[in-house]
Image (tube, rainbow, N blue to C red; front, side, top):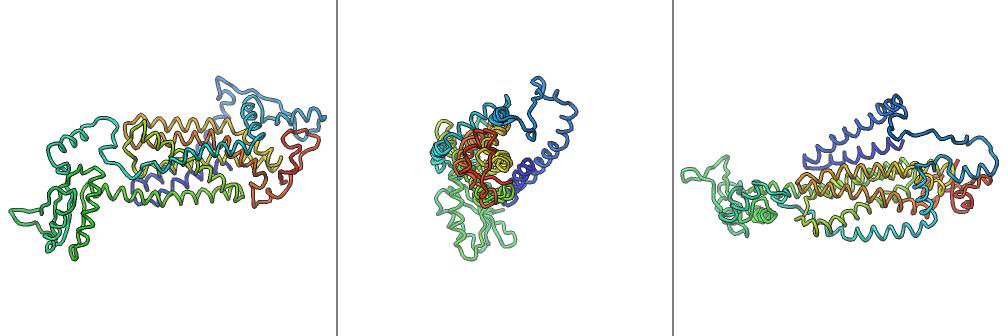
Length: 458
């Protein structure tokens, strides 16, 4: 169930890109979803079959050894049962002792841990408004030296920077003079002329083409601002039916659409992920808290990235789709770790109570989730070797965000907050109302003595 829910969450998250008005974003959703479906099917069919055929040899050179554990249904003497329970049965084998120690440390001071962690994350998130994602010039996409950028800079030294890529205005022929006059009065326009042949304007279907040469590089943000001013002027001319196009206008429309997509898709992703969590955990409070911590993790990532991008890295800004892609990847992938953790915690809480369930869940999933997070972060970090600003920024955002979510949010904040809230974390399910009934003879240091504060359901 957790693996299915995890795959489903990521699939639904990337499919939210279908709401984008940009074909580049919209097409990414189905492609990524199909890849995840293929990976899920392989992990549920081929991988188990391969492991069954290879046996423990699949883990060479560190082949696991069988560990004899007592049958939970077999009654033993109190001393033996106490020792077994205190060791959490198989949960604290050699591979789990480190995470068992962390779980016990968090359980000993949950309020202190989550408050300190929250303060740390909020400090990082406070710099998120400094993240500049209003768009960048096309020439800033390259991190190295390329001929196209060098050529554009050389042209700007000797000619009008926008001479090589003019802006075009299509308008009714009888309003051409007014459009030309209005365009000439726009700040940032160097030259304006009507497309002519043999000294006469070229008229097609009652329309003429007006060519405007901009003072700034056609691929710069300043040129896009000029196009906006041109549109404002020519659209005000009654009967002109003017349409402003060209490379700069396309870049402007792409940037505007990307900002619209970002503001639309992010809330949709949050709603979809929240719905999946509610269905999976059969709770409302826990999913809301999990989603809130994931959003906080993303905000912290943006804040830290803003400090580094604006400072040591010296980046000129970011494309509007950078935070969108980072958000979709981090929320869809980052929430997976909370799914793995909290589904295990819920299973253990049903049997042992919420407090013990949290400790057992963190102990048993800590190593696996952390390993998965480190591998995922390293995979995205590999994109940073490509000298394109967009990929380097996405690589850093996702890699850093995954590590924050894995090492801080899932390891400290979520368990500590859940421990402090107690069984109410499962509200409004029945698990939040029933009290724990630990085995009096077990001597379990986690469950004994917590009857007053923890709930359980059979």
